[in-house]
Image (cartoon, rainbow, N blue to C red; front, side, top):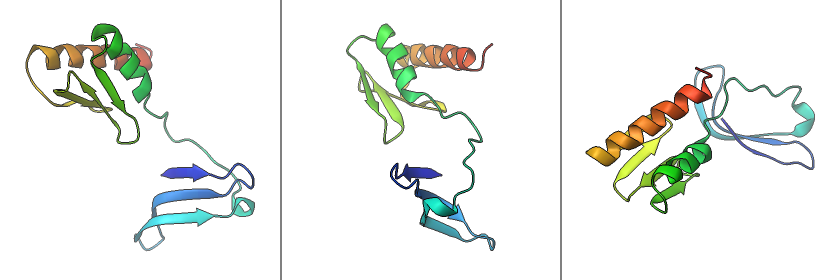
Length: 109
């Protein structure tokens, strides 16, 4: 996982790298001179975009925790890139519907 890039020399910091023997290395720093290519395997989830969408439905009741990777809605419903992971009831159901629609649009359906 790419954690950081030094824009001055293009050195990279990787997290949870796996060596050839399958051992996980928590942090690896690669010198910019040794990096030949950077490719994105998948599009990053737009947590901020989802928070903005939820804000339209739940004004002033949405808190984005971008670094932690989740959104709190009404201080009771927790939603991540995987959907609603905490909370129940009508509010959680509405958040799930907004999430589902957001995901459909992101996939171009």
